[in-house]
Image (tube, rainbow, N blue to C red):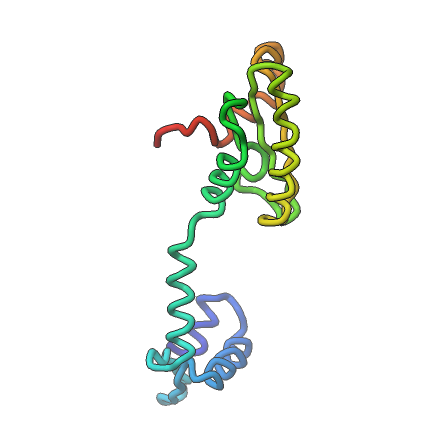
Length: 171
């Protein structure tokens, strides 16, 4: 493929492509050829750089989705005996999160006693989320009674648009 074709596809200058391709050539990742006036580049599939990058891309593509990993972390670290429902909502659930976004979770418990018992688990889970994902956990915990009293609040409609974590929905 020529430098100008690559530049057109990537919507960058052909000089930027030229500099980058020369760096890749220095790593033996691509081979250079001149055909007429065109500078053509071809991936060197026999190079060590290609083999390492190919393996890395394969591993990344097979890696677990971040949201699924977060769901598993939440389920694993929340006491199922205390919780009735867990929903991931907010920017993370919408797919509009930023690197510094909170992890907004909505948790329904049976009563105020369960709400109090849940606090120590949430402290531990908050530390795990900060350590693993670099984001602060923002739990919103309500009892079943509080949910029925607050069902008209905007936050409840936001939660209903979120991703159900527990109990796991089919699909």
